[in-house]
Length: 477
Image (cartoon, rainbow, N blue to C red; front, side):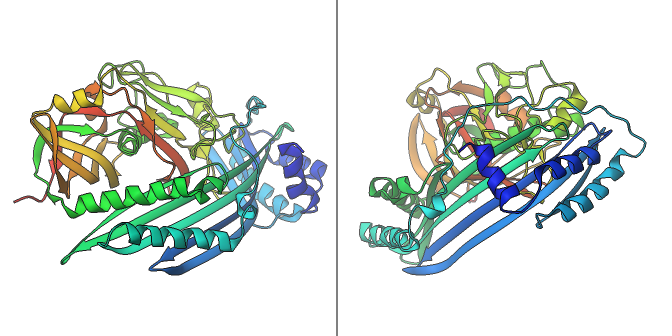
C-alpha cells in the first residue's frame, strides 16, 4: 500500500471524513491567498526510563489533529484542533480567512513531487514487547555497574515515535509521509571519594528498535558514557583566556548548528535580523569552509522525505569555500525573497505553523590529518564534546560549555579539563578556521533543535577543525 493510501485510511476512512468535501473547504478557505495548506497528523509515541535499577517512568501517547494555514503576503492565519472532523475544519477555515482581507493573491506553485523514500514506514512501537525494552534497560544498568566499581548511578532511556502526515493544498495536490523515529540514551555517574562526575551518550534515527536491542550496539553506548565520566573524574579546572581551540569531529558540530546554522535560516535573513543578512555571495568564512544542510541522508534523525509543507528535502549548500551561497527556506520566506524552497519548512506538530528549520547541518571534510591539527598547537584547548549553549542570532555571539575537553601542550593532547566555556561570535569564528580535518562524521542521532518554542529532531556533523583564536572561559585560579 502506498504512503498516500495508508494516510487516506488514517485521516479519511478511519476518521469518517469525506475527501471531496474537505478539498472544497480547503480550496474555499485559501481562495485569493498566496499559499497555505491543511496539515493532517497522527502520531504514536512512547518513552521508558530506567534509573537506579528500576523503571522510573513509562509513557505511551497517541495524538491526532490538523492545522490549517492561509498565507497572504507576509501574513499567515493559522488554526488547529485535535478534533478530526469536518465541523472543526470548517471553523478553522473561517478563522484563517481573516488574513486575506483586501488581498488578492495568486496561489503559489505546488511543491514538486518525489518518489524517493529516505526511511521505512514500519511502526517501531509495535515491533517489540514492552518487557523486551525494560529488559534492555536493565541489561544496560547491570553492564555499566559490572564495568567499573566506581559507578554510582546508571540512567537509561529508550523512546520511539511513529508519525503519519498528509498535506492538502488548495489546488488539490496531496503529499504524504510516514516517519519512524527511535532513540537510546545512557548516562553514568561515577564517584571517587567525595567527587562525582557524569558521562552520557546516545544514538537514534529513523529506523526500528532492532539495532538498539543488539548488545554489540548498546554496549558501545554504555562504554562511551562510562569513558566520558571517568575522564571527567580525573579532570582539573580549565584555564581562561584567548587561545587556539581544536574542535573534535561529529557532535561538536552542534556549535556550528547554533552559532552559524540558525543565522542561515530564511526568516532571519528576510527580516534582516541575522548577522549574515545582506552577505550573499560574500566571504563569510575562511577558505576551505563548506557547510551544507542535507535532509536527504537515509535513516538519519534530521532527515525528511518531504518537509511539513510537502516540499521534498534538499541538499542545500549554505557556505562554499568560505562564500555564502544559500539559505534554508520554507515556502513563504522563499517566495518573499525571490528564491526557491529548500525543503526546510518544519513544524513540531499540527498545533504549530511551519518555519525555516535545519535538518542535518554539516561542515564538509578538509585535507588535514587530525593528528597534524593537534600537532600544530603549542598551547590550546581540544574540545571533544559539548553540553548546552546560548546564541544571539542578531549579533552572532555565542557561549558553549564543553562537556569533555583537554589541554593541548606542545602539540600533544594532555590533561582533561572541566568547566571550559567557549565564547565568541559565529561569523567571526568561521573566519579564524585555519585547518580542517579529513575525518568528517555525523553525530549519533540525538539532536533536538528549539526555535520559537518548537522542537524538531536534527542532525549535526563536522570534521576536526582548528580555530586560531577563541575566548575560553574557565575556573582555574
